[in-house]
Amino acid sequence: MLIPRIIQFCQKKGWYDKVNSRKIHSGTIPRLGSVGFVPVFLGASILYLGMHGTQLLTYLPIFVGGFLVFVLGLLDDLYELPPRYKLLGQGAASLIPLVCGVHLSTLGPWNLGILGWVLTFVWLIGMSNAFNLIDGVDGLCGSLSLGAALSLGVVSLQGTGAGLGFILGGCIVGFLAYNKPPARIFMGDGGSQFLGFMIGALPLLKTIAGFSFNVFPMVVVLSSIPLLDTVAAIWRRTREGRPFFTPDKRHLHHKLMEMGYTTKSILALLVTIQTGLCGVSLLAVLGIGGLRGFMVLGVGLGVMILFFAIMHYTSHAISRIKDRSI
Image 1 (cartoon, rainbow, N blue to C red):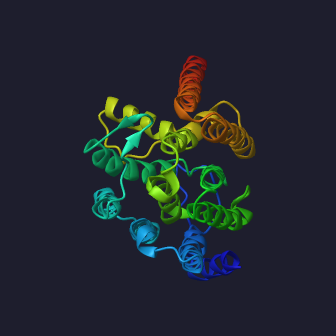
Image 2 (tube, rainbow, N blue to C red):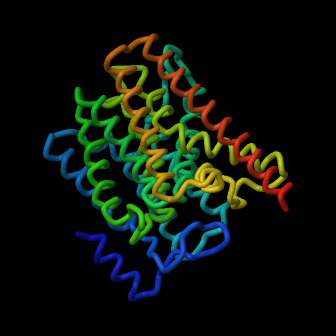
């Protein structure tokens, strides 16, 4: 109900996503889709928790942190904030769950102790940026987020946290109705960073992750496409002596376009892979469980690393062939 009105409002104000050499779309497309689903998710979640008599204070830290990430991303969509301000804001938002006791305590069979606090801080900032960087193709960030959110909902059916996963998934579906190719609206940085933060924060809650030490590794696998794309970007820019926030056209979706994939075929390929990751993750956590489930998740992550390596070397081979032809 909200998204069409937001599209009309942005058209009236002339608020469109800027087209440049790095973007793969053309035309005037609004980029404030996050305004349509982020407040709805937060409001519906608070209402849901209140109806079930759950203490809101348990969930409030990630809601406040996520809302801060959303506001900063929204300001960036409107005014293009300097990268250092965005990073400082993401750091402040990531500290909110930490100071309230929401942090990673185990990784598979290992207890992390104080290291868990550091990893949580880095994890939340990394997830916010990873889902932002992968948001380069119509429907892609939303579709990847949808798979992760619904999978979290399924594995959390034993507790109240399941509702949050399904509510987030429902909000994403409502947005994807207008973001599927060809997109009528983009979620913008406010939406992509919020989704990354929430998907990264939900498995940290004891109400969701307490019954299985495989829930957090599961989210790593479910987020492997944006996470590995971000790791590749960090490595690429560090090797070339460029700052991390320097944009380029060498992300996974850019490489697939170079190989001849269209926007729709890129979305179909990566959503198919994400669906497989969802199936493997649910099997590992609910069907197998324990240490064997942890090993299955490790194999799934290894397959994704191999996939990215193949894409990297294939893209380089295509670039060399094009250079020789010139």
